[in-house]
Image (tube, rainbow, N blue to C red):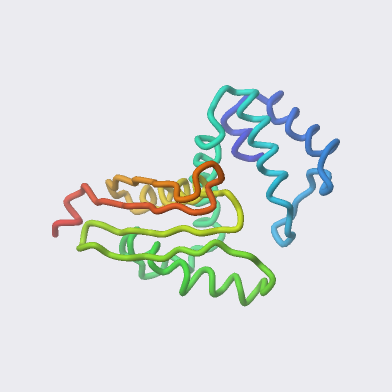
Length: 179
């Protein structure tokens, strides 16, 4: 809702709140420590897309970028001694997801397999029980922006129609990649 409030008129946010209050088990009340049915988010995105005329995938991707900024502000320790986006992204499983699993053992996290193809190319395989490949792309974009890099991000959905599996190919375009 923070992202919606920042980007759209107040009445759009109000419609989403009413939808959540009237139709969701959670009543639209969320905390950072709770677990919620991802179908609620999908319904909110569907309604938002209908209200503002932006495709659902684009909205979920924008939310991923927004979420990365929030992640950065809340967990700066994950960025200490990290030099670039590739280094950060390659450490998601070993550092971030490992910490999340220690705090929330029941969590069902997506997985990211990473493979370097030289200094300039990183291939990431995304797999999740939830259809959030566009969210992952937004998080990756947010990471690249944080490190002020120029990186092309190609996303190939491997589970057409649901977004539970994807391959991201990142290719650096900036001078740093050649230094």
